[in-house]
Length: 101
Image (cartoon, rainbow, N blue to C red; front, top):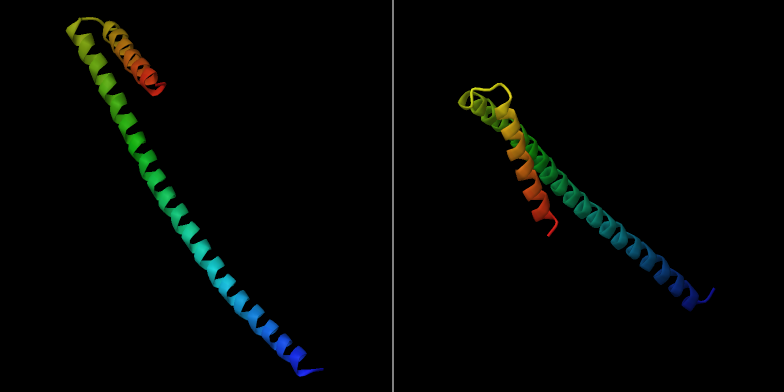
């Protein structure tokens, strides 16, 4: 073997080891970065779903209270539920129409 081939082989071994180390570190950094992003998005999504669920439950209580109040004002057992349903339907249709824009 000549000195040139031994030197070339040595350079090849060192460069492949160095490239493997750099690419391995880069792969780990990218994996950590993507994992952090996924965790942040998952946390925000869980908080958002929790907030929407609590808001929906609160809205349900408000609509039931509104219907019961109207029942007492109108001296009826069903009129408040009908008016409350119509108001809820109107609000839902307005929100739907605004979301289609």
